[in-house]
Length: 388
Image (cartoon, rainbow, N blue to C red; front, side, top):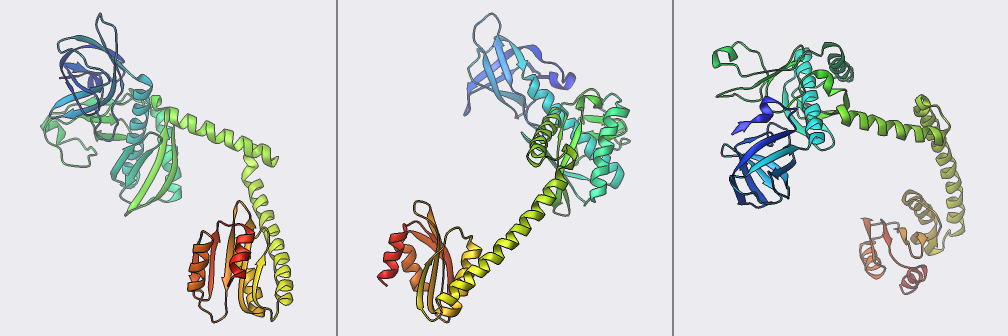
């Protein structure tokens, strides 16, 4: 089979003949005598598009493309007659996006290898982002340098991408990246000044066609790091969305676009101050309730608008003075109630099991202190405790 995508990755339309067509698991598996559809492999997803029979109505969508037993199999939506002439049309938007991502990955990986000896031990070209796994850690400064250097290469170097098929003798003298030992014909893809790698994928003609490389994140992965990035159109769309989000934040906070982080920091500081004031007021309220119920024995309390932590603190405060079992609830009919219950030196495991069963609840904790929630109305809760 003639692999047109290796000869010209910018080929969008081509003519071919159908060799065979059989019913497959996901559609109709078609083999052509020549194809520009790239089959999934080398970390790059397959192309999609359509096959149009010559002189006939109807089109067969190309859903997937895979290499099987030395053949390239096009999984299509409709059958095609063996021997028929067809026109293949590549989904160019998808192809060019994948070319931008894959080429950008080469440049980033090659530069990381040249600068710090990083080996690319994993690569995934996803629908949203690209991930690269390096075998050694990078600092935040190296991460920033890698992004800056990759983009500098796109804009300043921009030498043509060189794709060759060296002989075994020539290959011995070429320093190229490869995740495993290769045999047979090896395809070398070189981005002069950035990378030289064995690769079967489709790539841009010039680095500038990648447009932009944006490194999104870096996290520890095994002995090295995993980097997420986007390139080209994906990078443009990502940054456009980020800018739109920041513009909205800017409007909400009445802050200039490049001052939103400082405005958020002030807002968070103010929020912490308000939370501290609220906690102080809650403590005053809880202390007053604890004093009110001193020596009361078993106590059932309802208090509106409490967080689980505040509910815990209320229960602990009253429990300290009441001398019996204390159960505190916060919530509303129709929404359910959170609860906290305790008994100094007691064992509430049987009690909380019975409570959860009777009031459609869930929760637990230590033998003498439990927390959870119930899906019941206030009168049902009061009836349960009244029957104890």
